[in-house]
Image (cartoon, rainbow, N blue to C red):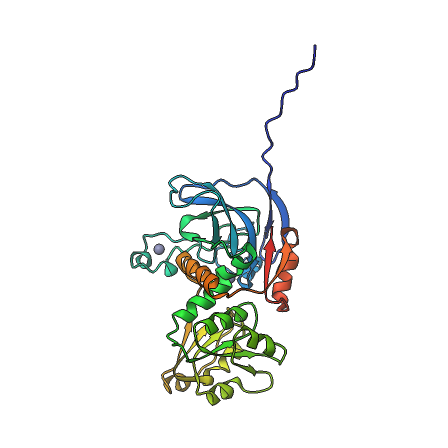
Length: 348
Ligand SMILES: [Zn+2]
Ligand SMILES: [Zn+2]
């Protein structure tokens, strides 16, 4: 009698994730079960995830109350591959992005006023729940932005934090076409900020340390470049009439403090480079010329959608270096070195 062979049930193959298991710990590549989406969530097959400076909050345990192990990553581009209960507005196969805004509760006072960005129970991918340094992640529907067909996953990923933060802060800055807008830092944030500012019709002044990024800044749309290592950027901006807006992207409070005198009347320093030490400013500096300083965090998923559509429309694109998931630790170190040209992206 012939031997009967019974086909084994197909094995559910686990997925690979790059996790941090304690504050200051190294990246560990481990296998986990592919997660199922709960009600109001989708599962995303991750195609690319940007490596952002804020991932240091997860790596070093700098976010109050963060739980470990944790998978970082809040610049996620992928494809919906399963829907949780009650999800009707999204479909499997749809390309979506998830950024810094990982969801809101819809019930707190900020949410009741429509100010979802400042939700009291705001969630952040890679901090509050596992982010995009893994093959599959789950995310609530409030965090999803559709990705236009003409943007690749690797192009879309950095636009979901670095892109939205520069685009959204500039479009709400009050600067009008023709105004002098300075972008401090020609790096991961700054190289996108210069492009957006140019497409918004501003007179763009790029500020970098050293002469090496001058040609690139011009190519990206700056009409002037100030080398702040060789000359006073504040004086340079005053020669141009003073800046309506200075977008401070490099996480150096000292460099930001030195720029305040470059603001024109009613000028505003917008802070998006996240540093922990204080910016120094005297009341007199702010009172004379009615100048202000404002911080800005990314924006909602709807703002992400606007960012991606505007990038599609205008041709704004990030410059990236890619690494495979298995080399997440190296990708993070490359980003932290400040040498990357300009955003680091993990490509699955
Ligand atoms: Zn970020
Ligand atoms: Zn809320």
